[in-house]
Each structure stands twice: as C-alpha cells, then as structure tokens.
Length: 205
Image 1 (cartoon, rainbow, N blue to C red):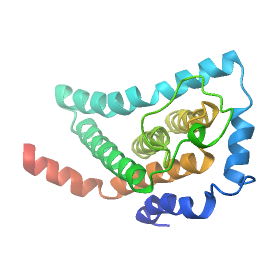
Image 2 (cartoon, rainbow, N blue to C red):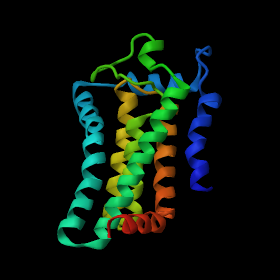
Image 3 (cartoon, rainbow, N blue to C red):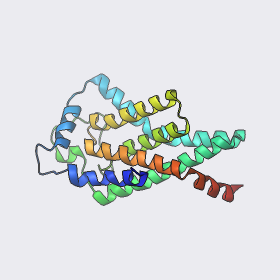
C-alpha cells in the first residue's frame, strides 16, 4: 500500500467505525474496557508516557539536526532535516483533520470517563499524540534500522497510543487513525528524502 493511501485511510475510519447513536459501538466498548482498568500506578505511568510525546517529537529532530550542523556531519544534518519536515507535515495533516471532522472527545459524550490527566483543548479525531509518536518512531526506524532503535521506538509509540485511551481522551479509532497517519507520513518523507535534501542543499549550501 502506498504511503499516501495510508495517510487518508485514517480519515475513512471516522465513517466506518464511529457512530455515536450505537450504544454497543465497538469503539466505545474497547474504550471502556481500557479506560475502566486503572490504578494510581498506571495513571502515573500513562500520564508520563503521554507527556513524553511532545518533548521528544521536538527535541529528537532538533537534536539530530543541531548535532549535524555543529559537527559537520552531513548525514545527521540530512536526517534531522527530513525528520523536521515530517513533523511539520504530520502536524498539518493531523490538526487539519481535527478541524474538518470535529469529533467530540469521549468525556464530552460518555458518562463516568476516567480522566487522571485532565481534559484536552482540541478535537478528538485523529489522535495528535499518536500520529506524532508514530511519525517519530517510523522516521527513527527507517534512518536507524538497528533492532535496538526500532523495537524501543515502536514500543514507546504503542504505549503512547494506549495511554491516550487509558487517560480517557481518545477513542480507539482516534488512536488507530493517528498511527496510520504518523506511519504514512514517515514512509512518505523517507520516500522523498532525496528530493527534500536537494531542495535544502540548494537553499543553504
């Protein structure tokens, strides 16, 4: 499947999975099964896991790019550039979809939702934390394909995705769409990496 198809497949989940009029919707059932299982320890763990996404999403490409520039390591500079472009593209796609689809958060529709980390200010579909985590994990895996990079990267991304349901702020379909969008963006940017680098070199070298 082409990367571009993966990106838009997430948007189709809205019409195929989500139906707020069905009380036994699988999306709601799975959400309840995850959100209802909690303890003080899991609340702390998943809050920490969720909160790690934004700092790592910004710091990783910035750090790699900065290292490449300072040390004169052209490969690291190129990887940091591609990761930064992927991050910007994912941000644009994810938040555009949130505005267009305008889906309410689980706690806005359902009763007795466990919210240990509080409410969010944006719309629900797709999950921005999940798309960000999978964009970063995919880019790391493609540029550093050693198992000791790939396995931790996707384990972290998977836990970040799960945490969004455990914290009561996303449905499973939000998370699945975020994972598809993030992975698709990573694959797409890797495919066009040479074109991106050529444009960067023309502009700055």
